[in-house]
Each structure stands twice: as C-alpha cells, then as structure tokens.
Length: 378
Image 1 (tube, rainbow, N blue to C red):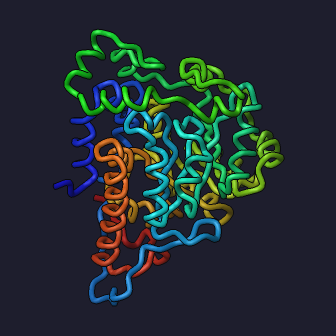
Image 2 (tube, rainbow, N blue to C red):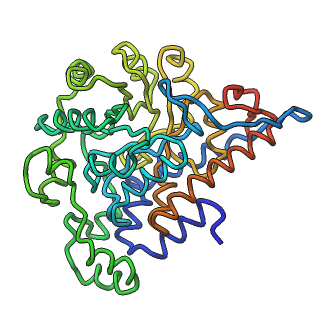
C-alpha cells in the first residue's frame, strides 16, 4: 500500500533503470540545492489554532481568475516519456480530474495538441524555452494559444545546462544508446524495457513540429541543452507579448532584484524556483528566499514557488509564507513513473487530502486565511 509521495518514489526507483531514475531524482553537482529545497520545509513547524469551526474547510483557490481545487499546479518537466509512455497526457488528465492546472514543457514528448485532446476541460499552461532559433518559441506560442492554453510559463534559469554528475556517470545521452551498462541495468527492469520497445524512444515532438522536421531526438535535445538563446533579456518580454495574448509567468526567480524586474516588465506572475536543484548547485532553497520576494512584489503579481514539496503540509507552509500556489515537479512524476495513470491520479489526490487534513488540524478553514502566524521556526 502506497501511502505517501516517498512510497511512490521508492516504487519508481524499483521500476526504472538507474539512468532514468537518476534523471528524474538527481540534482546538479553535489545535490546541495536539491537537498536544501527539502530541508527548508523541515525548518518550519506549525502553530495550530484550536476550538475553531472547521466544518466547512476547503483547499480551493483561484489562479488568474480561474478556480482551482487546490493551490497546486502540476509543473513543467521534460522527457517524461522516459518514465512512462504518454506520461504528459496522463499527467494532464490527472490534473484535470483533480481540478488543478497542468504546465506542459517545451521538452514534452507529447504534442501539445494531443495533450489538449486528452484533457479538453483542463486548465493547461505552456512552458517555454527560447532557443537561438526563435522560430521554435514563436511557433510553440502560436500553437499553444490556438489550442486554448491559458498561461505561458517562461523559464529563465536555464541559459546553459547545469552540470549533473549522474548523467556523466550513467552515460546519459539522447537518444538512448545500448551499452553494456544500460543493458545490464535494463535486464532487471523488464517492464520498462518492454514499454520502450513497444512505444519507441521518446521524442521531443513539439520542437520537431515547430521546425517542420521529422523527430530527431539527438538533434533536438542538443538544441535544448546547447543552443539556448544567450542574448535573452528582460526587453524580450515585449517580444513574448507580441506572440502571446494570455497571462505570462516568469519561472526561475531567486532574488528580490529579479522579482522587481519581473514586476517592472508587467509579468502576471513569477515562480520562485531553483529548477528543482538541477541547474545551479549552489542555489538557495526556493522556500528560503520566498518571504523576501513576496514582501517585495507580492502586491504587484502572483508569486508561486516550487522545489522540495513532498507533502500536502508543505503546500500549506509555502502558502503561509506568502506563495499564491505551489508548482509540483517530482512528486507527480514519481506517481506516473511507478503506476502510470493510476499513480498520477493517486499522488495528486494524496497531496490534496494531506493539505485538507493540515488545514483542519491548524484551525484554518480556507487557504486565504493562511499567514505567517500559523508557523514558527523548528
């Protein structure tokens, strides 16, 4: 019986070959930023209010005028087809069933149109990387807008690929090439191997479609890791607005200075994020810098946070520190990587249930009532 996100992580580890699990689970360099993200939540404990009416307790909130069943967003993660076939479509469906938004990555292994077809009623957001060839970004924005995606999430903390030692040790390359090491690993993961043989190696389909090319994972993965637009600046938000009419959220903010610039350039929201600890190994925990960023710009735009969320109670802590909502990265991936569609549904239901229980035990019947008075340093 899987009862928490940690259980799904272990189940995913048992099912995936090391190469795939390390890609899902690992961080940059020594993993310091990755571990800081998790440790930051442990530094806070709760101050509950007793004898409070919690007979009508709700996790519901609103993002950009749309109601969400909980202050959670399934965040953008790339190459999800490496963990389970059509993983992005399954995650979008799970998010739609749970009543929360889903963000599709530019590095998705499913076409954005196919994801929309599988989640016709979902609140879908589109994440954007900007490569040197800006035709890709422009086409992705136009296609996402035509498909009814409501919000653009522009990732700005990945001008170059962070150093990930586990990728070097595992010989992680795209497309996957059979090596003695991978072969030995796969022998012990027959279910994963069978799915890969049956469905084929995942492809970065949106990049291929935008370029009007056949899928070529090696070339398109190289474009993401080595051909990002290094000239991208704040002034380019005007260029984004020329091609996107919906809301714009800037993901990868880690300082007050960057948050103020995002507000000055009329961003609708920001995500306080260190990319799940996968980019800059010495980055601070997202939760640690959240309060000062909220204090600086929280009255001008919506502030989201990601990194290290493994419990519904973590979501409550983030909201008490000022976040509008939390983006979930690895948690739903552990679900889909371990049990496919069922796992994706279960993890989201689990987190929402844990959050509701936490609100009830805190004596806070609605998320709008959360503030710093419900927390104290551990």
